[in-house]
Amino acid sequence: MRWFALAAVALLVLATIGQMRSARAPGWGDVHVFPDVEGPHAPSTLKTPEPADWRRFDSGGTGRLAVLLTDPDSAWLGLVSGLRSHGIPFVVTDEPERALRHQVVLIYPRLSGAVFQPATLRALGDFAREGGTLLAVNVLGGGLDAVFGFEGVRARRDHMRVRFDAERPLLAGLADPRESEIRIAATDPPATRIGSHDYLAPAEPPLAVYEDGAAAVVQRRFATGGRALALGFDPGLLLLKACNRRLEGVSDAYANAFDPSADVPMRLLAAAYRSGEPLAVTVEPVPDGRALALMLTHDIDYSESLANAVVYAEMARDAGVRATFFVQTKYVRDWNDDAFFDDAGAGNLARLAELDMEIASHSVSHSLVFDTFPLGDGREHYPAYRPFVKSGTQTYDATILGELRVSRFLLERLGDAPVVSFRPGHLANPKVLPQALEASGYRFSSSVSANVSLTHLPFRLNHGRGTEAETGVFEFPVTIEDELGEPLLERLDDALDVAARIAKHGGAFVVLVHPNVIGEKLVFEQRLLAALRDEAWLGALGDYGRWWASRDSVSLDVVPGPDGDELRLHAPTPIDGLTLRLPPGFTLEKARPVASRPDRWVLDRVEGDIRLALRPGHG
Image (cartoon, rainbow, N blue to C red):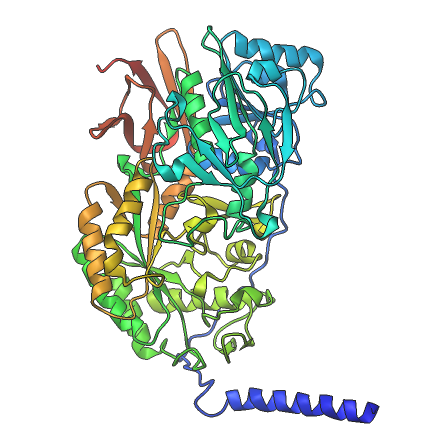
């Protein structure tokens, strides 16, 4: 019996080897080798992750939002990421006395008698009663229920939606139905659930309720102008899970729709900050006062696509637009396609570079199972690296670092242009991708859809798509893609509708097109550009990425002085077209106003430390 079993195993192994050999029969597995092209030679080494420290954000003036941190083991990194993306100046502190020097204080992630002494709890209540704006997540006790205007709290794990009352003045910017009701979890899988709390017997009509009518966000306003506002769910945790791709399936649509579920709570915090801080200045998410950052991106993963891409690039050039081309360096013939990254392909690549398009990587193998590849040793190089796709579920001799390193090397060597952006085939997204991208020299990723991330803003990727450490790579989620639903041109009006919804608050609008054909897809791009040219910033993903990275490092403070208020900006790297939202009726020295948005002002260039006069009135 044992012999029979061993024989069966041996036959199975031989059959498997035979299948592998037949898959590599003549013609299959053929490799195009460029003469005298070999590399990269320098190894790629992943950084040891450094846990993020909230103390990095503990400096700044009293005009900022103060985050009073009550638990450093919370999802504070998600909250901070959201504040940065939404351009809200803030400081993080664990000292109540320091926080209470600010006009607006956010207690995070919970407020209870277990985290504050009675004297501190009294001071927090007095702060709101005497005119301050007190915001808190998860108010669970401490005797401040009456300050926030409710009578008890109930823990839940079954809430999936939150409905905001757009009729309330603080929520006036959330009039879009897709903003007034957001999704915070899905019925299935249960892993998408986040804990939440109902606030019982609210004294004022709730600002938001859950799907069963229980109060999700409550407030109490005081005659002094003070406000106490409590959220029953954690906006930092929502953002952290969404941006780490742990809420996939929460949105009703994978792509091609507007779902700002992770953005809306941050907009509520921004509105409360502007309401409570008379000199609130925030940073807009799009350059030059524009409402939308439109990026035309193209995935080159088919034998005809590289030649077709030249036609798309010439259209973009004629329109005065720089587009992005994610190019698969496919030099191995396999189940997917012919080895189209050959001499002719290199010629088309050079033409794209000549037309001043951004060249970006779309991997080597474009495998459906890229997210299951081993990491690799960081020494993979061309032409020795030869990944072979046998089927939709099997790929041999491939690694994550090999896909990143070798494709970037070939594109830079043959395209004679720096490569800083990456998009995986099929948006397959391994957990190690953020740190692997960083180790391979990439700065920007477009590897997830906006509706999976539940945000229409870029964000910094975390190490291992986890909760503790950041990388230097930024993600730019895909908004519109060409393979789901009706033919792309028939969806033009729907795409413009999504663009208009994003533009109300400002954000990124990344369009993904496969140039496998010339015709209706090209016409779609032409008509999209014509419709959005006047309101959108237009450019390559890498160009917006560099601007966004500079924006992410900008810090600002408004400092009152005897000669008037002064805006102090610090930009470690130069940035052009930085757009600021000022308090209503204010003007900014050496900045130009945006005619269509009177509270937005543009600085043509910021570098280092500058000081500008912030003046009331319309001068």
